[in-house]
Amino acid sequence: MADRPGRPGRADERGAALLTVLLLVAVMAVLSAAVLERLTLSTRLSANSAFMDQAHAYADSAGLLIRSRLGDLVAAEPGKLTAERARLGQPHPVPVPGGSVTVTLQDGGNCFNLNSLVAGKGEEDLKQRPIAIRQFTTLMQLLGVRPADAQLVALAAADWIDSDSVAVRGGAEDESYMGGDLPYRTANRMMIDRSELRAVAGVTPAIYNLVRPWICALPVAELSPINVNTLMPQQAPLLAMLVPDKLSLDMARAMIAQRPRGGYGSTVAFWAAPALRGITPPAETGQQVQLMTRWFRAELEVAMGDTAMRQGALYDAQAEPVRLVRKFWGDEG
Figure (tube, helix red, strand yellow):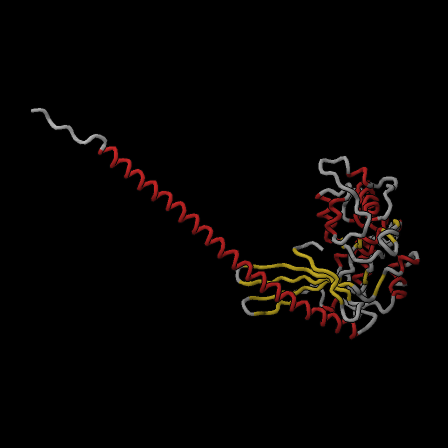
């Protein structure tokens, strides 16, 4: 008697069912991992959002204290401010629930004001200011930029800001920028942030990184207001740039080192100092030297746990009350 054959395909069906189950398990594992990843990301985003909200609140509160502090500084001794009295450059940590806020005040005018490259009352009347172009060129040379490169950058920066579209000899207007891979035009207005200098012809990353700590973009088309009572010894190039070819770096260092304990009492006394014997600055340059600070730069760092946020602000202490000009993030501004 012949053997009865088994049911066809039964083993195949069991194998297919097993594969289906394994496939479902694999799909569920992948979905679970994706859901868990999304949940983790969502949790982190929520925590970061909460931190940023709290950090901004702390920074805003610190801003109110800064304005009050600056108002007191200006009122305490109108007409003169020294680095020692203002405690400039010194970090001031303030404990807050869950972390700390560290505030560092700087003289926001002790820098080369990029907007001083032009003079004018409005955005449509900005004309190049030769004395500022020369000062910027001198500053860059003192910092180690080659003379030809320094001249190119200074002229191109002035062309970038001035109201017209006609390039000066050695400068750069729209035609210098329209032929690149990413064409763009000159701003023909004052700079808002010093980082705008990176877009100017001739400014390489190396040059920008070199000059960045020495430049600023104050919201006025005025020559850089250098307070000789708050200048730090390492800031001597800012003083030497005022009278190119006459006021040397060594003389500038000497003026800062020999500064009276309570600061210079008048600009006349400053220019009459023995170290500057024989130097008579142009009237416009003589007025650049200040004894009081109008612009203050505040740097804030909010730290909570392993997370930190950095914010900067520029204040106008001449306004009543002290006015917040603008905020910026990171190291720019």
